[in-house]
Length: 163
Image 1 (cartoon, rainbow, N blue to C red):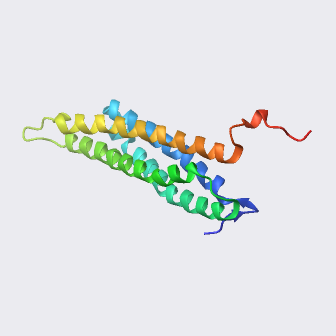
Image 2 (cartoon, rainbow, N blue to C red; image 1 turned 135 degrees about the vertical axis):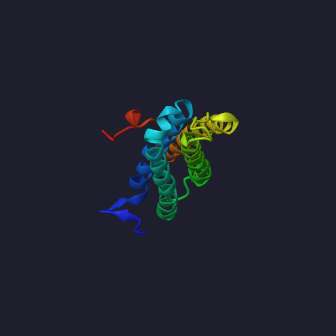
Image 3 (tube, rainbow, N blue to C red; image 1 turned 90 degrees about the vertical axis):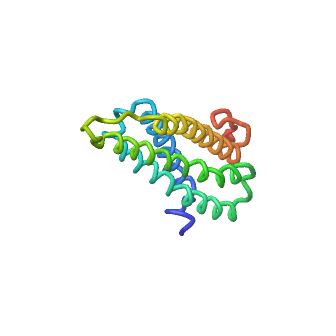
């Protein structure tokens, strides 16, 4: 994998896919968990966004390691970034589980009656809320540590510009 595009480091470019898609996926999973009626309409879209976000994480990690070799160790940011995949994978699992449970509930039962979500549906929905919230927190932690690795503790707007 190249480590730059037109002279720009690849890592900040790839990271934006994760920064946009993973929170969007987490919010989608939250929506599916609290609004079961949306699972049939939006479920596979949420699964797709979650899969794309999950697939982008190793690319961001690899490009970050390449950047690290050029500019030095980003400290805590690298550690937190390495953990992000272990948050995204369970998010993907619960997204698929929510859609699968919905499809199963929509199948006709013996007398043609629809079955409710039942205990497994409720358990998966609660788990989905917890996992989605954990993903949102972890994305924030990774992003904040990355910003501190680049800017230090000085906000960009107050940094001296050499004027």
